[in-house]
Every structure is written in structure tokens, then in C-alpha cells.
Length: 118
Image 1 (cartoon, rainbow, N blue to C red):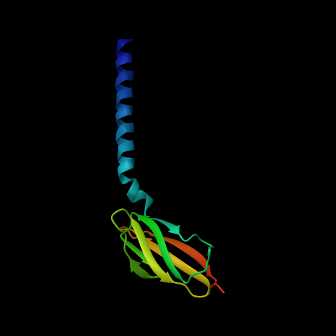
Image 2 (image 1 turned 90 degrees about the vertical axis):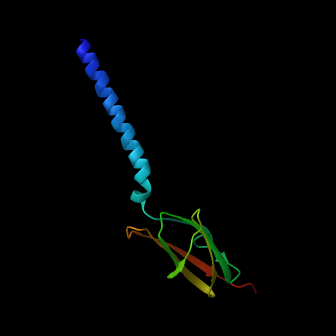
Image 3 (image 1 turned 120 degrees about the horizontal axis):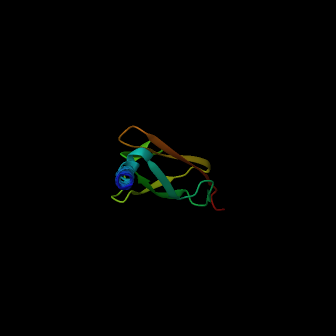
């Protein structure tokens, strides 16, 4: 009876240790597993704008390179990016593409309409 109790206590301690190490490892490598993340905060997809000059703002995580319509842009230390862009009259498609150091790519597409004030 006593040997059985010691066995179950030892088994429980080992399982707790394995779960702790597994959870810690997952939290540490999660950024590598997820890949690049892009969040465009302004403007919103499908928005109609009255001014042709646009300030695109957003955040990027786990990126090595980030591009706006094929042109490389840069993020600050907290992952924030802000770039100016001139819209054509009518329908515009804007792409933000991010690559991580493992070659994984994430693309966000914005479809905007520029309708000038009359």
C-alpha cells in the first residue's frame, strides 16, 4: 500500500514537471510557431475616403521585412508602422506584406475608395 502511494506521488510530480516544462516551452516558441502578424488599424477595409493623401497605420509582430505595395517600410521597436500614401480617384487596392526570418509570408489587402469632395 505504501509503495503504491509513493508510486502515484512520484508519477504525479513527474507529470506536473512535464506539463510545466511543456507550457513554458510553448510560450517561449509561440512567436516562432505563429509567424508574422499584421494588423492595419487605419484605414479600415472598404472605407470611402474624401482626401487623396492617406496615412496608413498599424502594427506588425514577428516580422523581418514589411512592404507596402511592394515598397519596404519600417516598424519601430514596439512594432508600429505609419506610412503616407497617395490614392488614385476611385477604387484602390493596397497590400501590406510581411515576411519573417523563416520565409513565411502574411499579406493584408485593403480595398479603399477615394471619392473627392465636390
